[in-house]
Length: 197
Image (tube, rainbow, N blue to C red; front, top):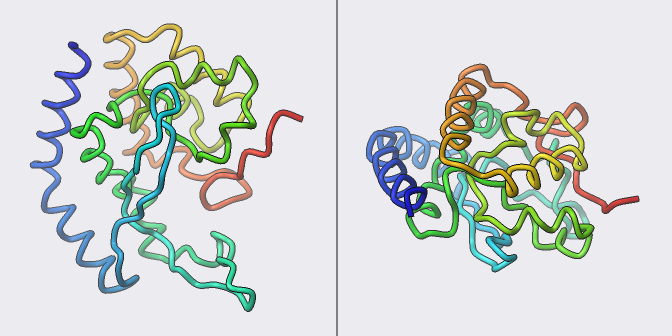
C-alpha cells in the first residue's frame, strides 16, 4: 500500500514538473518523425498479465523492400538518440504508473515474445509489478548480459523493500545525469533475448 501511494504521488508530481519537457518533446517528435508520437507496445506485467506501455518514439518506421522494419541502427535518428540518452523517452511511462500497470521501481517489462524463453528461476521476475527503473538498470542496464539482468531482477523480486526502492531511485537519477549504460556495446538499444542456450 505504501509503495502504491508513493508511486501515485511521485508520478503525478513528476508529470506536472516535466510537462514543459513533455510538450516540447511531443512537438519535436511530431515535426521530425511524424505521428504517432507515442510508441505503444504490449508488455507482460505482474504475473505476466499483458498491458500497453507508452514511450516517446525515437525511430523512423522505414522498411526494406520486403516490408520489414530496417535494423534499429538505421532507423534511429539524431533526435531519437538525444531523447534516449537523456531518458526522456521513458517519461510517458509515468501514465502507466498512474494507471497501476507499472511501479516506479521494479523489473523492466520486456517483450511478450520472451515469456516462453525464460527458465523457472527467471520467471520469478514477474512475481512483482514491473517498473520504470530497477535493480538491473542501476547495475548495468543495457551494458550487461540478459542472464545477469534476470539474476538481478529475481534478486529484487525476492528482496523488495521501500528502502531498496529509495536507493534504486537515487542511483537511477545519478545514472541518468551521467548518461550511463544507455545502450549495449553492439546495439543502439539492446540485443534481443534468444533464450537460455
